[in-house]
Image 1 (cartoon, rainbow over the protein chains, first blue to last red):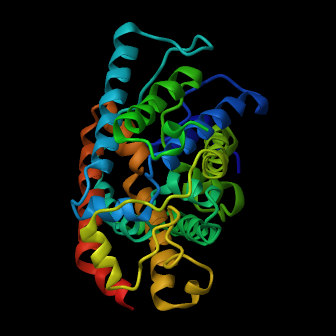
Image 2: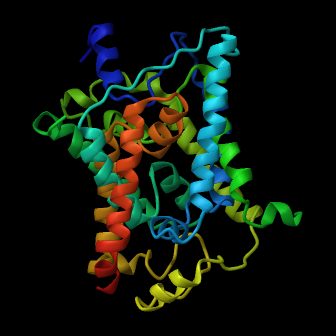
Image 3: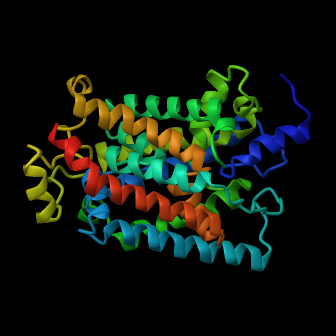
Length: 164
Length: 187
C-alpha cells in the first residue's frame, strides 16, 4: 500500500530511532559504507566484551566498572561530537546539512524500558550484541534474535492497546 | 597478532570508539545511530500483515540492515582472528554465585552451559533465550529504542526522554539480575 509521503514519514518517525534523515536517493551500493561501519562496531563490541553475558551480570550486580566505563565514555565522546557537529555546522560527505531529531516522551520509555531491561539481563544482549554474539559463533542466539523480531512484531500489532 | 589487540580492550578504548559511531554515521550519511529499528525493518520487509506500524518503505532504511549485517561480520572477524582463547576474568563474587547454578565455564563470551541448542528444550534455557529475546524485541520497540538509540545516541544529543529510557533499562536489568534471575538460573 503506497502512502502519501508525509504520512509515511510520520509513521517512520514515531519510532524515534534510526530515522533516515537523508533526502538523497541512494543506490544499493552506496550502503557498503554502513556495512563497513557495522564491521568496526561489531569488532569493538566483541573486543570490549560488551556482548558477554557475564559482563552484563557484573554490571547489574555492581561488581565491575567496565560496562559503566564503556557506556559513560561512549556518551561523553558522542555528546562532544554532536556538540561540535552542531556548533561548526558540519555537513555530511555528500554535502547535506546534518539533522538530529528531538525525541518525544512517551510512557513507553518507562514500560518498554523496564521490559527491555529484563530481557537485557536475561540474554546478556541488547539488539546490536545479538548480531555480534551470533557472529562470534554462538549460533543458538539466532533463536533469541528471531524471538526478538517476534517481540517487535507483537508490539507493532498491539501497540494501539498499550499505554503510551 | 600483537597482544594489545588479542587481549580484551579496556573500557577507555572501547567506549570512545563506540561513541565515535555517532559522528561517523552522521557524517557519512546523515543517519542517527540506533540498532533496534533493524528488527522493525525485518518485520516490515517480511511480515507487515497490514499492521500500520510495519507499512512503510523499509527500503529507505536499508542502511540499517547493512549496518547490522556488518555487526555480524565484525563478530565473525573479531572472534576468529582478533581473540586469544583465555577464559574471561570475572568478579569472584559472580563466580561463586554462578557456581551455585552449576555454571563454571568462562570460555567464550556467550556461556555455552546456559545458551546451547538442547537447553532450548529446558525451562531455564527457554525462558532465558526465547522469553528473554522476546522482551528485548518488544521492550526496545515499546521504548522507541535500545542502548544504542537511546543510551548512546539519545544521551549524546541531550534528549531527556532518552535519559528516562536509559534509567528504566538499568532498573529493569537490576530487578531481573538480582531478584528474578536467581530463581530462573536454579531451574
